[in-house]
Image (cartoon, rainbow, N blue to C red; front, side):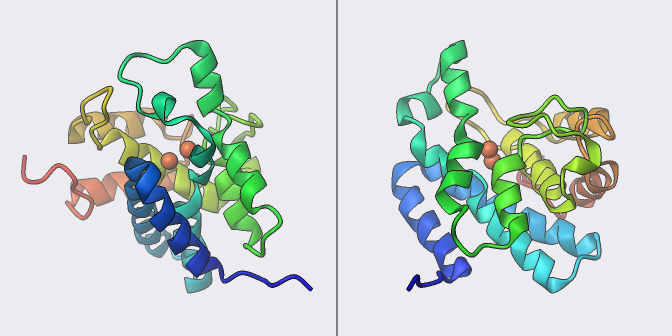
Length: 197
Ligand SMILES: [Fe+2]
Ligand SMILES: [Fe+2]
């Protein structure tokens, strides 16, 4: 007999464990999950889908647990080999959870959050509506959160730089409606990691 896991508790435990190893990714996942809930509400999704977005956000980078820390936190630019290794994290994450009783959408968010509408993403080069709505939401939250946070290898992007990237990427890399909602969240100050500046 196999015991089915409680997916919400699983996500919390993963977060707790990851915080010891890679506190940036743990915090990033939490912030992406919270942003995805805000976007999901504004996009009119039902509460079940919104909960899936939360779990997906909390787990989307779980595969980074399989990437050496010296690569994740490298100050200098990555070699091509190192970049290839980082790009494995969606597949590693998917392998970790694929046999567990997560909704299909959560597994998809983990595997496909680096896909882009124009097919330029990875690992599968999916295009447009081949990428699920839930995953398109996580992608916009992921990109926004990552850009607006300081990393060891670069400063945080300013509010106007983040808006510029979201605007430039609408319909090309990012879902038009979802990017629009995100820009509105930033412009109205509902999402404001920059403080009052
Ligand atoms: Fe990722
Ligand atoms: Fe991420």
